[in-house]
Length: 226
Image 1 (cartoon, rainbow, N blue to C red):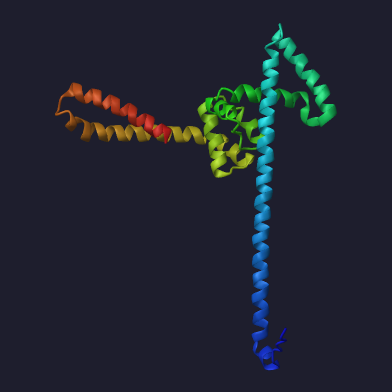
Image 2 (image 1 turned 45 degrees about the vertical axis):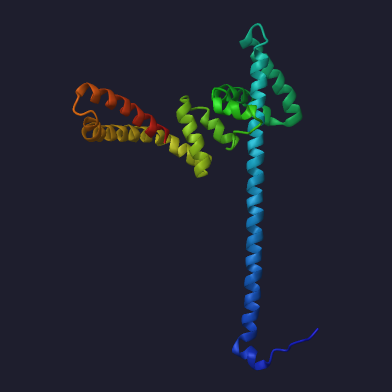
């Protein structure tokens, strides 16, 4: 191994220092890359755990609802069943399984089992729940299926926190966009009716009315599904 001694005048000129700076920069870059990998892994693990727990709560809700169907007095049996589960599960798993939380799990299944896509994915052993449990507790309060689905999808795509999703719900984002879409339909229909459809029928009013009606429905469905 050959030792290379940097002359004193090179140190004075800054050459030796620049070599050290390059090494420090490389080390810092390596550290940043590794840090990013670990942070991403931590986020993925947390997301996976949250998603799995949400699916588990859905399954708990399903089993409770199905068991309730076996009781003669379903309402009375359901209350007794939840109380029994509360007493046993709390001893094993702590306060997360209080009466209120078990009732929420039951409601979670009832609300989201109406979604055919959710049922289809679960039947294929695919977990459809990509948000946190707290997200879904808030989403359950939305009665309209389309509106609820809208906020669920937007929360996934935009990476909304629960607080941000709550803010968007309170601002009536869904209703404002729906109103905007109705305006789009009306404007598109107007121009098609005035310019394209009338000419396509050679001026026959009966034909123009039929084509206008059919096209309006097509535009309406297209815009709402975009």
